[in-house]
Amino acid sequence: MAVDMDRLNAFIGRFVGDLGAAVHAGMVVIGDRLGLYKALAAGPMSSAELAAKTDTDERYVREWLSSQAAGGYVNYDEKTNRFSLSEEQAFALADEDSPAYLPGAFQLALGSLLSVPRITDSFRTGAGMGWGEHDENVFHGCEKFFRPGYAANLVSTWIPALDDTKEKLTAGARAADVGCGKGASTLLMAKAFPKSRFFGFDYHDKSIEAARETAKREGLAERVTFEVAKAKEYPGKDYDFVAVFDCLHDMGDPAGAAAHVRQSLNQDGTWMIVEPFANDDLKDNLNPVGRVYYSFSTLLCTPCSRSQEVGLCLGAQAGEKRMRQVVTSAGFKRFRRAAETPFNIVYEARP
Ligand SMILES: C[S@@+](CC[C@H](N)C(=O)[O-])C[C@H]1O[C@@H](n2cnc3c(N)ncnc32)[C@H](O)[C@@H]1O
Image (cartoon, rainbow, N blue to C red; front, top):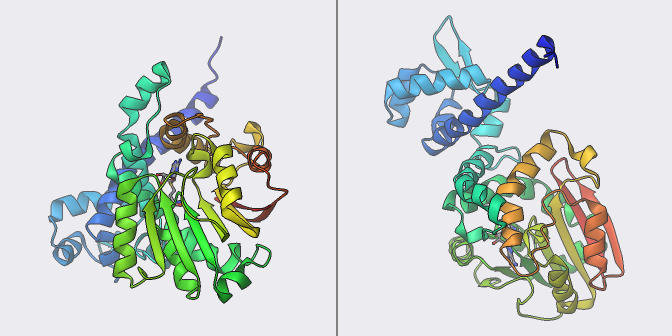
């Protein structure tokens, strides 16, 4: 077989981009931790000025700035020998409240990659790996990555896209956030709907501890309760609203979880299911977003499901058809896609 040199060179070009991106993940986490992006957002500066401002070593900072400029995350002016962030770069790298805040994604990636040796073994043994068995950067990175998207969409778009849910939450309702992780989504909803009572459940104790701390710090502990509980076992009945954010596919028995949600809702209740954006067929997910999700799914979601009873392993790219099967198998009569973004699909299920 003859190697086509043009195609080989194109593939190697792609590889160089990917290798740069892989090591660049560490650069972004360093820049985020040390406040380098935030300091640089103030205006153009030399490596010495940035180092002085952030109390860091100039030589390291110069090398880091060079990597950033080469990767297009920072701009370099050769006339002044100064570096700067454009408005857009600062929006995505230096502003934690921006809907496009990106550094959490790389923290999640680096934390997930620490499980590569164990997951390599899992390919041979088929063993699972529970969410709580990962490095703590997975939990913190996950929250940091997902919270901006929830802050941008949840209250303004996703909840209003559901039939009558916004009205119920505004008037005062009982709501559960199942698989809530560190509670970012629960707390955003609690702030937006002060007359409602919120219950966050997750089977990972450290995430629940962190969620409780945040609720206390933000003065929401009176109306928001966080408890360690599995999705098939969480307490309470007659909820008006149950939400699951990016976790149904992580569960070993999502159909069992759906049945538990069904019996915990009141007759007119609503279940909101937020899942990663995915098409039904593999061929339609072979794109950059699909690549991100299939890779995270290999390291996090599939092993998490495999570690639990049933071990259905939906994967992060299950798609609407598969989700509909899981949800309707639990007795939900109505199921529809209520909203979507490039990264998420929001489904509404009603009894
Ligand atoms: C990708 S994280 C999403 C966390 C949070 N919902 C968010 O959007 O930031 C998946 C979460 O599902 C939780 N989880 C997985 N299986 C679970 C189960 N069977 N019952 C309850 N929580 C579960 C994990 O502990 C983890 O916090």
